[in-house]
Picture 1 (cartoon, rainbow, N blue to C red):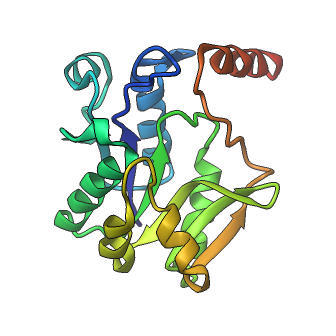
Picture 2 (cartoon, helix red, strand yellow):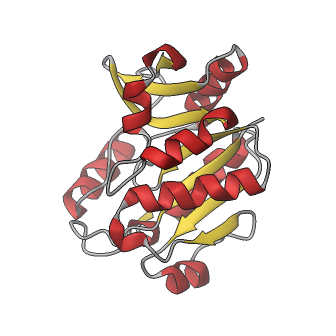
Length: 199
């Protein structure tokens, strides 16, 4: 099985605070992502923290995750991805599923569908919604160095994925969950209302 990488280092400027500390139901978003990764069978689970890292460590239940601190988090998500992929290389992970902490609609079945594509030979598998590539993304270990080299600023794996279409398999996940980002408190309110409607 691949490992999992949860990118949770941002300060959440539009939200008003780090999204790792945002609570949805009984869980912090970062704990929710770790739980989904573990239920999907990913191991180890690495969480990259940055803004308010000490507070996140004290508040979240990260005892079943490997925590990596990205001191360069103000430069953007690219530095967090590089930090996480370096950890994956050190851990000799055969592949990694990359989660963004602010997409709580991603579930176990989505991860498992990406893993199936990877096991079928895809060097990269990308969850797609309405035909558009989104997250999460699964990367084979053979791509780590190249992806890290292309990750700059707020750009993660996108540059590498677009430059290597022959290696990327889009995996339709419309029926499995949601790719909704929580960027503002209003986004969280809408998601809470949606969850209330389904319970």
